[in-house]
Image (tube, rainbow, N blue to C red; front, side):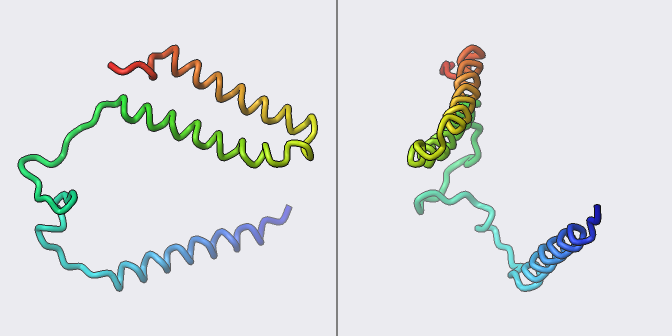
Length: 116
C-alpha cells in the first residue's frame, strides 16, 4: 500500500500544531506577579495553606459517574432509532450494557462504592 497521503496529512497536522503553539508562545504575555500563583475562591482571600488533598473516594465516585454518564450518551440516540437498528442493534446495545454491568459489579465487589 502507498502511505504517502497518510504521511503528508500527519506531517501537515504536526506542523500546524507546532505553528499554533509557537505563535501562542510568541504573542502571550510573560509578566508574572505573586498574585497569579495564589488560589482564588469567591473573592475571599485564603488563610493558611490553600492546598489540601481529597480522599480517593471522591475520585472513584467521579470516575464511576462519568462511566455511567457516557453510557446515557450512547443509550439515548440508540433509543431514538431502536426500530431501524433491528436485532443487530439490540445485540450491540446488550453487549454494551453487559460490559457496563460487569464493570459496576467489579467496582462493587472491590468496595469502590463503600465510603470509608
